[in-house]
Every structure is written in structure tokens, then in C-alpha cells.
Length: 416
Image (cartoon, rainbow, N blue to C red; front, side):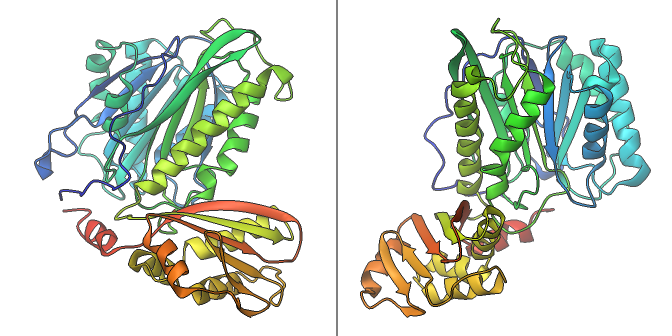
């Protein structure tokens, strides 16, 4: 089906810096040909010897064969990476032995074509669940062609190659200094529906030419993902294929950083955090059928985990999301969602704001409540909800979108 572009789609693809040591190529394997669509749907990244990596993946108990392989490879290869192959159009999830055979064939092709260790090769796939490929080497046979066209990444082409129901390519990055040496960061992400990440997001890959050990990368990745990709939701569903990886080539010539507490990492950590936060916001802004970007801030909770739980109950409520789509400032539904979270709150001291307008306090509607003012805020395309549950000192922010009929249209026709 033809997808209507998100109202938040940027006017142009962002300018990303060159990341020294990274090569890439894209191609079409024809995953979308039966739908009459000609497009690239596979990409290959090749990284220099010694590249460090870290990854976080879905916690789903029905994770794809590709996720299973990546978890094993991270351990077997001790956090080193040489190559990454990703396809769109078929998730290779719940495909039994066929899924493992597909991976084996792809890995064999990567090893033979690129001359790299098997345990330093990573895979991912996104698309329809439960459909085995017609040939185990369906993706692997693309490797000779892809390897022959390797070049510094065309970031937009790579990002478009793993889109599914995305309506715009998502990327972010920038440069900073480590110990006086400039280092670059470039990240690409795909995702639009089946979004409530649980240790990662749909598919996200961030590259840097800083020199960092796998242990440092892992600490940076998990810290950034927690407050970005793991704090967004579109529809409350966690994918079988969620994968997020961070690669460091060391190509910048910056000194090797071996501790996440190294003060020389301050600017780099801020850049990584901003890159992941920007990607997370783009993910929500391209939520299937989304017309509004929503920030939900929970304050006064007993713990950050409690604040996040409350925020997610609000963000995932169909009643709240449809009200937002219609511009209905129904603050009572916020009260409902906070209560159903079963987290500690002080009901009679809780306060709720829409934007900067206090709508509820003291266990009831605020005396200064103004329906027109609240409705005006909900009529906009950026909605802010803040709740102080008055039970402690912890806070958390989550981001979501509204739920429109377009979401039903997209998912009703997903396989056709």
C-alpha cells in the first residue's frame, strides 16, 4: 500500500559526518518485487580489523534467528566486528530450521567473500514474521555483488534499504573531540510500527571512529538506550527482531579509551546520548499513522523504574492515544492510566499538567482549569503531559504518538 508521509518528515536527509574505516553498499534482493515495488532492501557494512562493538536486543521469547546469532557472536567474538548484513522484507523470525540455515548460508558467504572471522559477522532482518525464504542462500548470494561496490557509506541509501512501513529515513550524528582529536558519530534507524522497545528498538546501528573498548561501548550504549530508545512506544508491541548496535573503528586516531569513567569521554558521551535521543524522537514521529508527537514526564515517583512504568501506562493507553488524535483534552483518562499502573502514588496530592496548564490537583479538577486552554494544547501537533504523583523524588520521560485510523489501515494491509 502507498503510505502517506508523516507530517513530521524532515525536508531533507540530515548531513552526517564521514566515519573513518566504515564501508557500505546496498542492493535489491527483490523482497518487495511481488508488491510491484523496486527498491534496495539489503545492505552490507564492512569494518576494519579491530573494530569494537556492543549490542542490545529484544527480550522477546520469540526472538528471530538473527537476534539469536548476534547474541552468540558478541560473546564468541569478544566484542569485535568486521561485517554487518541486514535485509528488509522478511524478519527471519519463527522460521524454525530454515531460519538457522539462512543465517548459516549468509555467514558462510560473508566469511568467504570478505575474508573475515565468522564470529565477527552480524546479521539482522526486518519484515513479515513466519515466512521462510525460498532458498537458504537467498541473502548470502548477494555478497559478491555487494562487496564489489563497497565505498564510504551513502547514509541515506543505507537507511532507505532497511525501511519497512517507515515513511522517511531516520539518521542522526555529529562530531566532537576526544583528547583534542576529532571523532565522528553517524547513526541510522528504522522503525514505525510494532514499537515498544525492550532493550533496543526496531533496528538501529550507530558508527564512530573513536577508539573504545567493547566494555566502554557497552556501558555507553546501555546508558543511552535506556533513556531514549527504551523510553518510546508507538503501539505497545515489542518486535521479535529488535536490535541496536554501536561500532567503534578507531580510525580517527584518537587515543584508546578503556574506562567509561574517563573524563575525556564527556563530550563524546553527550554526543552519543543526543544521537540516540534524536533517533528515538524520529522513531515516534514516524509512528504508523501518527499525527502528534507526545512527551510524557512523570515526576515525584518512588523510583525511576516506577516513573517509567507509569509513563508507559499513559503512553500505551488506546483511550488516551485516540483522545489525543481527536484533540480531546480528557485528563480523566490520565488519572485512569496512572491508577491502573498499580505504582505507588499519593492520589490526593497528585497534579497533572497539559503543557503549562494545571488541569488536576488535590484529588480533583484544578480550580483554575480552563477547557479551552487545555483543548488548544491538545489540538497542536506537539503535546506535553506532566504528572507529579507525589510519592517520592524520582522522574522519567517517555515519548509516544497518537493513535489514528491510519494505524488500522496500515496494519490491516501489512501483508498485501
